[in-house]
Image (cartoon, rainbow, N blue to C red; front, top):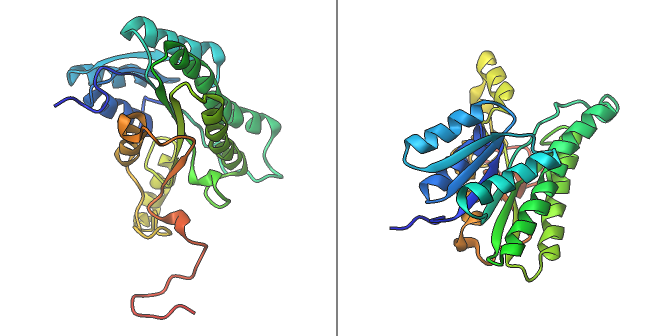
Length: 268
């Protein structure tokens, strides 16, 4: 049985770990040739793991917020595998939790460069390549529940992710009639390299049971759960999904803040 991305070519940034790595492996398992990009040398091991499993992959050490590096990724897909059908702009940084009055211009500039300019560069160059090829395609960007409203990240991070949500809406319109779809995923708390300090702190304090306690599922997500949503958006199963921000947060954003009640109690 053919995979959902059989004979497709996909780019994944932030692919050395977390959601990016899980998505690259899943895309390859579903038949895609995958170009993995990341700033760390670990991206090569991630690609090698795909090859060991029988997939096709190549890795580049790149900075997703540098235009020349994004161009390199697109060109590598075209030269190495003959085209480009899927681009997952997943690379991102947290920027820490510095408040509006404490953060520096340099911090904001760096967070916006990677988290927002990076996805725009992917839309610009991957979108153009897909449109010129005339076959359509799918661009997926990693946003966040922090881009929906306050309380899920630092100010710079939250602003950058809100920008990503708007970017996919605008890009979907700009790519009108090309057949190229642009969507975003908004993860809730997910165990990745970026969030590892949160998980390590909870482990050190003996409060891992509190991770994800604010959502109805009462747990954090694993990268593979987000990868499944990225696969859906990348595949023809989402052929009529365009310009959307799909929230994957265990139900966190389904409610305004409330005082939790024990089962059987009446909320006041």
